[in-house]
Image (cartoon, rainbow over all chains, first blue to last red; front, side):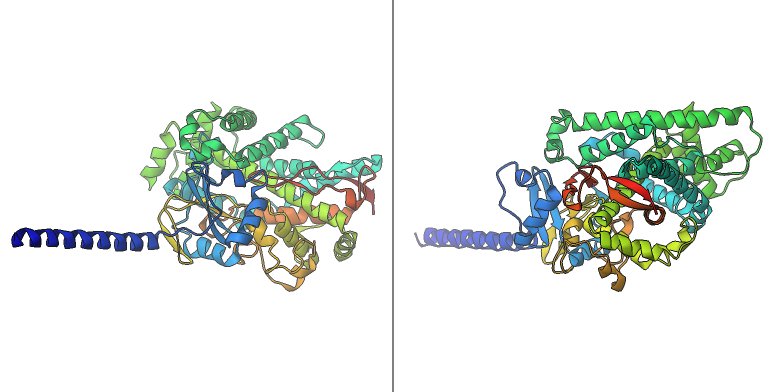
Length: 307
Length: 220
């Protein structure tokens, strides 16, 4: 009888200890996974409805209540919103590496695999960053293209001047868009993609703006990955259509450029990025430095594409 | 290293260059033109600032060159003030945590999405007195730049993901804006007054002016 009593007592104590222990552990565990504060969440959808159609403004308002570091639950996606310089600094400096990846909008699921903007901080990404840093945006490259920028801005002024003489209004954003478009296309291909009165400029601008708006739109498929199969708002489909059309335009430009080259292979001073690439490609049996190989990589891809 | 690149070269799925073009076109054209459009909008809404900018540019003879920009602190301040009020990417581009991070005593879990609301930072009255007014003067004294070192103004982001096209975009915005102001006087089109100008924003990955700015150029 005594034996049974002690056995019960021991098991009771053991059970108590266990419960106590578990609750302490639980508290300790929950203590280290406390998320930043945030507005109350509805079941399943969380805070999706709170975003509205101007998320930057609604998030700014929410941060006045919940502070500069807050949590929102967007469907299944935990979103941390930072609204102060100090915490932004902590995130982008101290935790730069830990926070170095990107959430890719479902709209770009097809496109992002090769995009420097959306790739995680992988070897591919580092390669592309290095390529842009050493081949495109160095101060020597930019100094060398200064005259080109001057010329393109001069063309903008001529267009504005025409309108000035006729007393016509200018759509400032669209005109500057055309200028930048031609600047970039000249840097790459030495040709203007469009001119100020062309429909193509308008189409380009609409495509690019279209992509930006689609990506920025709150997309239910981003919050519930299972819905990606369905793409319920059609955002991915629309974005793909815009991007497809852009790619078509680019491809036709590159085709146009590669055709005359192949008929007259005569060596020509290197003017633009595509020239540099094409010349390298033609001489690809010479010994190449590692930078050359990087460039050559792009050439071969490009040539394959344009064929 | 060589082997790595060669492997990539012959991988049939990769079309880096096309993507790189597209990235540059997408990221470069829209953001630059939208910044110049907002700057012009603010200058038309604040004619006294336009006069100040024009006066400063009077020292330039002939077409504006990039080398002239360094002599124009007020123009540079206008660009910064435009970035503060109208950052092209108001939430930057979303980052993602690759591992759990402790911040301010809280936990940012792995795979969380991180948004940095630079639009809110740009309009925080604790940082910027009279935050909703367009006052380039505030940047004439303050030396903050936009290159990812001063976190109250990071329109291009910061850290390893900072916009790689920053140096080009920076040159292009200044040169274009300076040239437009230097060569013409401007008035708002369609007989609108500054009060009539619609300054509402359309949200996207980049923030647009909902109604395009139409302005009439006049001989100076």
